[in-house]
Amino acid sequence: MSDLLIRAATADDMPAVTAIYAHAVRYGTATFEIDPPDETEMTDRFRALADGGFPYLVAELDGLVRGYAYAALYRTRIAYRHTLEDSIYLDPEFHRRGIGRALLDRLLADAAGRGFRQMVAVIGDSGQVASIALHGAAGFRMVGTLEAVGYKFGRWIDTVLMQRSIG
Image 1 (tube, rainbow, N blue to C red):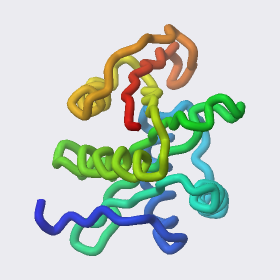
Image 2 (tube, helix red, strand yellow; image 1 turned 30 degrees about the horizontal axis):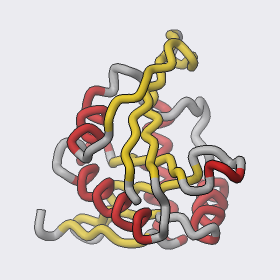
Image 3 (cartoon, rainbow, N blue to C red; image 1 turned 90 degrees about the vertical axis):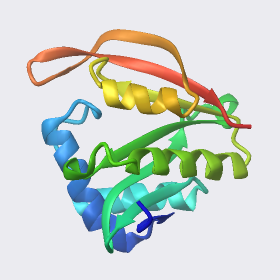
């Protein structure tokens, strides 16, 4: 995908980011949110991360945002300050094209460049085979499964935890 551009997100990308996330909320288990946040909320979330010095990226293909990824603190207590949690979301029509891997690779590099030491993937649903495989291919190792901790779409959903050193 030579025309794929991975770049830092801007506030102008938030309409596309909001639409991608809304689809994930409505139809997927990657997030445990039930109601999609509006563009104002997504912009506020973006600004909080960008202003906090965390990487927030978009994948642009043919001039359109087709995916995004960001890293935020895994937990807010001070002892966790060197550990991040990643989030990756793609336009549903652009899965399995290498965009997620390109975003994750850049996210890992950016996080390491900012001095972070660990990245944790908190994957909603043990049935998210593609996300688990993506993280495994990027060097994450399985560290555990929290069974039936979320309830969405009329069923109990696991959370899979994977981890990778980055510093």
